[in-house]
Amino acid sequence: MSSYNHQTAPTQFTEAGGIRFAYRRFGKNGGVPLLFFMHFTGTMDHWDPALTDGFAQGREVILFNNAGVSNSSGEVPTSIEEMAQHAATLIDSLGIKKLDVLGFSMGGLIAQQLTIDRPDHVRKLILVGTGPRSGEGMAALTPEAQEIFGAKYDPADELWLRVFFTPSEQSQAAGRRFLERQRARRENRDPLPNEKVAPAQLAALEKWGAPRENPYAYLKKITQPTLVVNGSNDVTVYTVNSFILQQNLPNAQLILYPDSNHGSQYQYPELFVEHATLFLNA
Amino acid sequence: MSSYNHQTAPTQFTEAGGIRFAYRRFGKNGGVPLLFFMHFTGTMDHWDPALTDGFAQGREVILFNNAGVSNSSGEVPTSIEEMAQHAATLIDSLGIKKLDVLGFSMGGLIAQQLTIDRPDHVRKLILVGTGPRSGEGMAALTPEAQEIFGAKYDPADELWLRVFFTPSEQSQAAGRRFLERQRARRENRDPLPNEKVAPAQLAALEKWGAPRENPYAYLKKITQPTLVVNGSNDVTVYTVNSFILQQNLPNAQLILYPDSNHGSQYQYPELFVEHATLFLNA
Image (cartoon, rainbow over all chains, first blue to last red; front, side, top):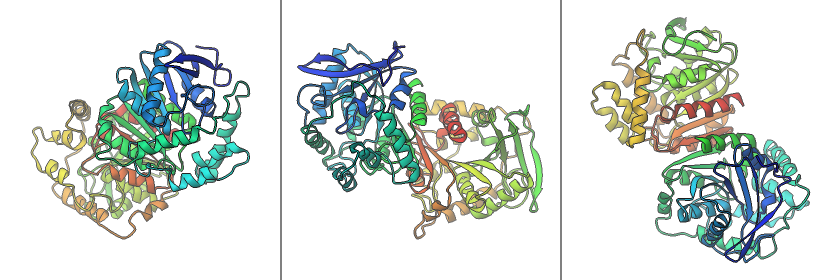
């Protein structure tokens, strides 16, 4: 067991393929580590300590910033495929031969692509608040997401109350507890991403989401056990996309939580960690 | 803790509303009991001991045969509403003021209706392999179910290998383990239902499934925490109906299992009991 946790894990750096990647690792050593793939415009600090520390009880947890994000060098790629290639170089650089992956939203797209590119490396896959290529409403930001991301918030991180939670009193209260947890790391936080990150990531999202023929056929290549999780009312990546993933992946379990939006795993963090741990340990 | 289990629990009888109901109860006394609602043409013996004994570790489990089925007297009603009324009289007769309900397939329809009729009695609801009023493909037996139920099997209970499991090797192997468990009660088994049961139950199913305006609006009345469970490829009550239930119920969690058909809870009995116990204990 590493003595570090979400709050205290130092940011480390590794050089791979010309990129200097920032990462943090903590938790119980010796098994298959769990690599986290972050959402649109997020850094390592955007993860919920209730999840990272929750998983760290039973396995090693690795967070990282992909190329061009925050304290990782390089340019943000404008395709999910290049982001997955960067992640693969990071894994090699860390000497990881077998891993589980957890991808949230955009991170779920990268996690899918990495699994296709590196089938022998990825053991199990957790896809949260995400969707397939050419999923419903994924060719551009949804109208709801455009409104939510276009509005102003003070403090700025209250944006996430609207992105991740429903308007219900109960969901918003869970959101405020999430924000408190997320803000709790005081030292050595990541710099916020610069202004080039959002446009590049958006271009990558739109390419992934663009209409194409037979769009879900590629999912048959992902034969790893997969857990698909979402909220009942995700307005950023519509919930039906999680159903589509489960129906088209060869070996997927689906869990949808009640009264929840894009960040259902942050609304029910203990339950999510229990469900995901049952899945990872099976 | 009652000393009985699925194999040894005696069949008891209680008189209510002119019906003599057969039932069995066992498990841990003192909390909220879990009442099981059986599928089309099933009796108490059709439940999987891995489920009933699994739940009985933590709560009291009650099985019963509804009116006209096997050793319960009376006529099988030709509507789900009347079946729910019979279940309500049974609950009153047993003096139960608060209960959790688990309904499988047709049993899930009765469980929904009972919850609407007796909102103060039902605490939580588990709906397995079932659907809403006027669900997709629910106006009649699906073509797949017609073929499966129309074929001959030797021994006859191998019917359930096709109803509950997918054609995959892994699912069929799980199905054979299920049949062994289901056959293990040797003494005091229920008589098989007579020839009047299937037509009456089918009439009830078709009324429930018939098209109507705004068919899912009634689900808003079910405010109890609900767990909806199904297989990835249910060909008897199409899997999409579980998604529709979750999307329209005010407070529902959905779990879909991989490579599974109508009886996913029998394919993954330990995992299902773990998931359902997490839900019931939350």
